[in-house]
Image (tube, rainbow, N blue to C red):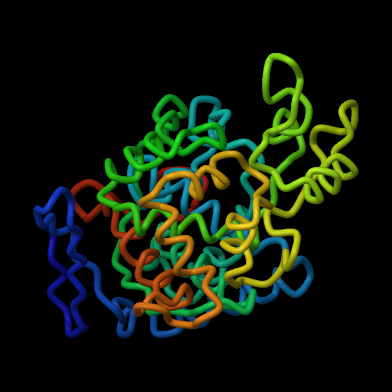
Length: 326
């Protein structure tokens, strides 16, 4: 296991998988405190600048980090361009935020060349995006190195809107994430968006007879049909949390409880006993019920996710340009 021998506060992420402890690569808070002291503030100011002109960049950055971590680990491989690279995968269609990472990287290369990895920039940017959307903030352990491999063929393990809860659980478990992490991380959909084409079948063609998904509340079904008519533009964007689309809050979980979820995979969380239990705790009007507060738990889950298959100097590098290997 690679260990950074510097004067920093160590954070070793411990993941529980099937009752066994699996220790990830070591990351540390303040990894750049000596080598590039302004690293985190530069990333923050860059994200803030883009957010000020387009607040919808926040869910874009969050999704970008998520998709990066689920393929090859959190190594910035999703940022690499190429006909057969991860960006070309169908599951990665509509990914946004690349220009934010590129801008931050350019500023960091000017400040401290060859020091800050693209993978770390993406992890920091995701945190800042949530914070700017009235969500929680958390300390992001850094020290990731950038991967050299990016293949679209490996993106098949990304979660899909059509996944059953069992499949979702398995995909997350394969990455060392449990059911609590699954529900917590999907809470990021509180500021997410999707296209009509990814859920319109729920409105008009859910069964062979052409009925609607019965788990959608009647009033919400009417609203969705207005937003996405049967022959309308399939690429039309719809907020995954119509109640408060730009605010990072718990209304997403209340939507699941009330049958107002956009994606079938999200709504299914209410039909499984294990995931429903977590949803209920987050959707409760009693803040902090049984110690579960979404704002606290989300940061913990993000730190855990961002430690997946971290690269070190042995199998990674610090890219000079995020879109291509050195």
